Length: 260
Length: 338
Image 1 (cartoon, helix red, strand yellow):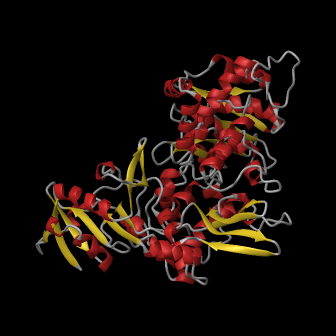
Image 2 (image 1 turned 180 degrees about the vertical axis):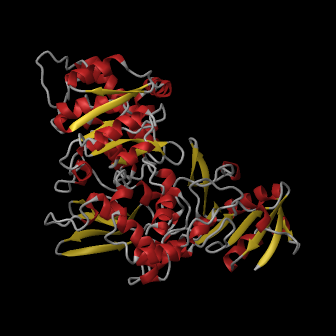
Image 3 (image 1 turned 30 degrees about the horizontal axis):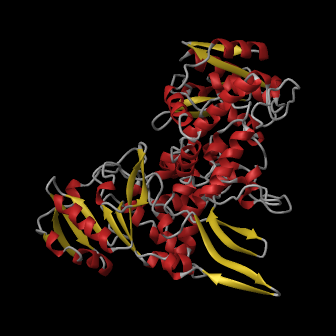
């Protein structure tokens, strides 16, 4: 049995946690797994293909309940836990957060340890996404408009991007509010664009860059570019992710050079 | 039913003739690493190297977003404008898969169960479905477990089966299909009786039967299997939106002062809001109850009420799912559940 399976099985059998969320082998790639008994932990795996951001389950009360749970996640899960804690969405006392390094299971006992892990393990940037952003940056304003209109007109509004995002945890999404109707909820080029712009705006300064929104899109729309670009702009303008949500903070020294 | 042969290089000529004659031709077109049904104007744009499109072909008869009617208030009266005839186009669906074509069966029954849905029926009546039998399958395919198969002709007007690099078998199944053949009569010759279609089809193992699932479901409403299976489900609508038979829709108002239109758009029973009452009560309050509804609807309620199953085994939902809710795997577990 792997150290991962042993460690998690012990946490369950000793009653430290009620459930472990990790990864198991799926049809073609790893998928989220939920272990309720030490026996279930035998299936747990951890490798480079384990890309799901498991933190998405941490705000689902029907899944995690009120009990203490364990999570064996990747870099982005840890980064998301920091952000969810910052936004008062999770109770860290009810969470045992772990990751795997080689064969060893590492437990990140508090925010400082999580932050240190995130600071020292930043993944290599996705070259494809960076190249796509560079290409779009070079377009004229009207070319960009046409590009996004064409791409987003294909969106069917299945909201897989929203569902896969661990920071899209609102009980009622802005697109479902109909008095007033901020965003048209049916699929159409303009309403799709309104939806994606809103989604990205709400992520500004909060997005951890896991790319799960784009990975979840069944139509492979390049929506990960939007959040990535937003993250870069926030970093250059307001100092980046560590300073929290730019939409809910105010600083008199803000450059405000985007107001023209 | 007539069996013909078309030389492989003649298929292109025939399709070009169809595009020239028919107002709208939908075919799989490459979109990134996948393919989707799009209107084509050129026979060269068809993607022939993909197994299935990401989305099914249902939007051809049941669009993602459609106007039901438009209205205008004039003093104390309201004028209603029906959808104009020119919105309904004669359409050929080129290179559908057998699991696409057979999906129109359940869809048509749903839209004619009680109210006869004029918009759906108008669109559906104008479709001619040209299917290509499957010589390959992937791990998500399970058509043979739900009464279909890689060469199943149900729902198709014409079915093409590639026999070898040079020849393709053409099964003309309906009068509508015959009319397409008539566009390019010289392209076809009579097929020899000895041509064996079955030998070139993909092998799709049978994992369970529909009846097995139906019988298990009769006693499974309170089963813990729903929570266990749905734990990883994120509650998005990807599965329903790519499904050839999912027909749930929402009605929305596109109002602009004294005029506007009523819109029908796709919805999904997997969404939290789908059954939310205005009182705040939700009869399906958890993802487990919504997942149960999805399976029950397709394998219990539809066969009981409409005498047809709501799944064609195309596997699209499994391929589209961000967290690998593999429906064939789940159904196999239900079939084997004690």
